[in-house]
Length: 312
Image (cartoon, rainbow, N blue to C red; front, side):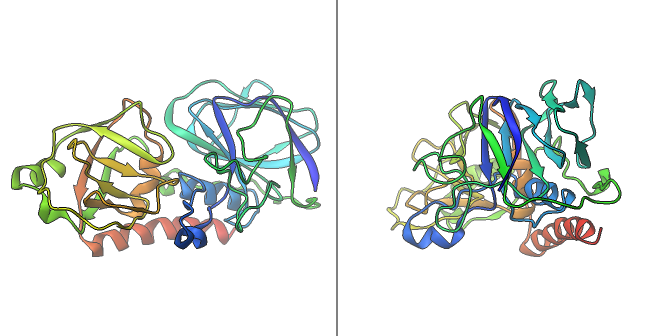
């Protein structure tokens, strides 16, 4: 364990995250983990780590960090205008820090969550097989809480070698966070929707409510009407679009509950979840209905982008 970064300012909400704990869902534990899993994987691969290593997830405002020793980092996801010793730095590429270098962020340009991976992978409390911070239980990550000023971040092991050349994910392979249309397949209860409501679901514009969080994005838009027959509780996944009695949909995210009884009228495909993770309160979105075959093609495209980094 090697201390590598000191927190001067934690930003608005910065936590340690990996790909979560999906193996605990059967026990009623939310999967958690990074909201934008593509960005986390890409950051780790750029930094020379395993895709599931722990990194920082920074929400809406970036932190101020100082390097305690030389290290390699990579910043992906939302563009918060990263700067090294005051100089602008590229996203989706490796950066080398010397001891004493200061990493800061100028302000949010696009997206809601940026990811900072450190060569060697961040250390943190492991709970149920994951270092991801669970804010609801106070487990995992940095003592189960967001970072605070004065915290010292450590890597799992000491890195003795660094990538010989700067790694980069070329722009054409990065998610387009400016495109806020989310591909979705019809959900298991879509037939409960009234015909006009089904048309609205896949054509209307919805706005992300300020009440949204890591559990789900609460959406405001045309009221959707569904048949009122009761449902037994059933298992849920990230991307499920639930429809409560209010008629305003909820898009489930990383910290979603493991079971529920509201109708699921659509499911956002995995390839569109990185875009969903980058939505901030006030942003607009539309659901675009796709087939399962189209969903698989989109997922393959993202997998190919990550494979290009694995080959570096």
